[in-house]
Image 1 (cartoon, rainbow, N blue to C red):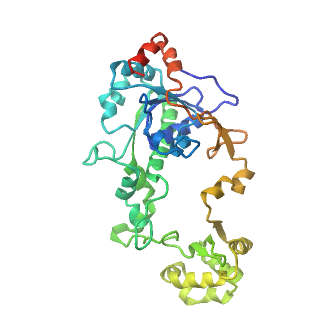
Image 2 (image 1 turned 90 degrees about the vertical axis):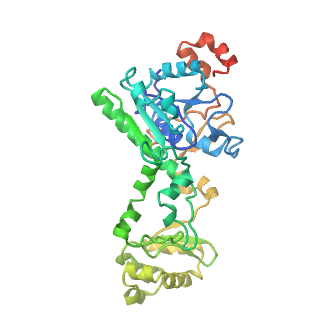
Image 3 (image 1 turned 45 degrees about the vertical axis):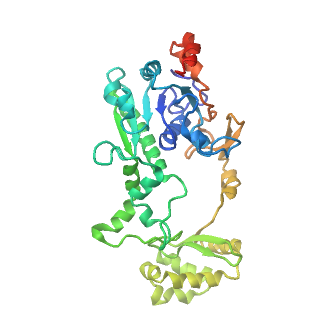
Length: 399
């Protein structure tokens, strides 16, 4: 099942991953494994495929989510309701290193795809099960989509404005689960190198999101007041957030300590005496008086453009950032200067993509095409010894 080794070799060359995946969490995990050189075989339903293929048509007719998390994979179509398809899948898993699945709770076990069922035939197999709430407990079979986990995990309670809770603009619960699946699979591969045996990994979206909620959880320890919703400003540090310049644009800035507050008052606001004002002499006092502090800062910025504010902040070594749009990101000067952009093929033609964090330069990631539905079915069937039956299986809608 191993594909030819590229030059230079990648860390997961020779590792085969089979994934029964849809949406974001599992596909993101397996795409990162593919970036590192693993062969990832994505099992999809004939004629339909991963339902994320149809989320939108924003990328030259392809779906934005699908393009993001599915490059460098092989697409194998199988109707797993058919015994013949299950036979093919089990033959494939007998040669695989990792199985990843985020089917509905209990579905994989009903297909004989639990770690307990698969391990006797392939003791080295690592099985990663991703679900909303994990096995056991009253929520095991509860449906779990990204926004619902954002809500159940408490994330919405601390995100937004004082008047309204606001979801994250990206699928952070799915992303969190996918990244923990990725890191745990890497750990299990290292462990298998020592023991020779695979193991089961269970990733629950609720576990991943509550782990990310560690700061607000401890901030509200023993029923203390939780961080208040404060829009794009930091809930417990001030000034740290967005401020409007005289040209109507917004600048993001952040102060972390009293030394920076003193420099900010002198070099940016032009009011060195303000640093000694007892009303604002600590972060806790500034947080309590954030409306007054904001008014002072925006008065000082009223005659300056956003770029002039940023130049003044840079000169004072005060942390700051532009409030970038998606159009800004496509041509961000730091990404361009560091050569972070490359391209991949797709059914719609070449598409720009970013090298994943930690890779690029002398150690580029694998950058294979975004697959068309079922593009690799015939080749994989032939590899497994079913090549002579490919037409029969297709006519019978098995593949």
